[in-house]
Length: 158
Image 1: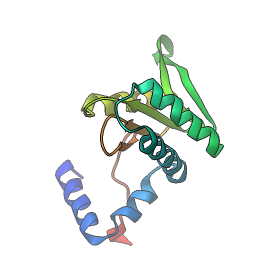
Image 2: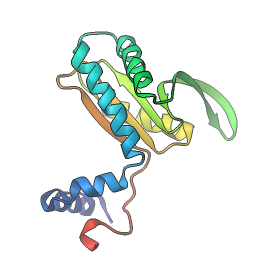
Image 3: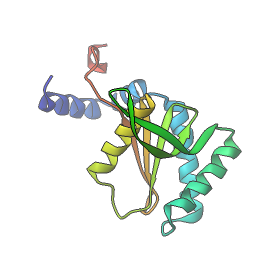
Image 4: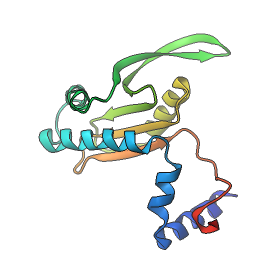
């Protein structure tokens, strides 16, 4: 399938009402990412936009603790090239060893932010990521998948 065909298929799904169900079936860790999103919304409602990213990171960690969701903050990850360590990066929040959470407090997200999250996910060998921008009203929430490939079946083929 080419990109144009996928866009048409996506539009058909949205119009058929099956889109949300299809997305939830194809998203990795839907319950966990939904809980993280709910925690982020709580933080954003309380603090609003205007603070530094580190403030939102601290507040989100408070919420994750209250929810009993395990996470690592500023987790170092090795960047490998041909099995040789060439650098290191720190993840904002790594939730339950399965979800990379990248926080921003900027005017607007750009394509590079999505690429960065996908690179972190690849380095961690996970399939789920969230990109959250606290500087916007409302909170900008983006689920990020490592690589989206067309599946063998879609809701139209049920």
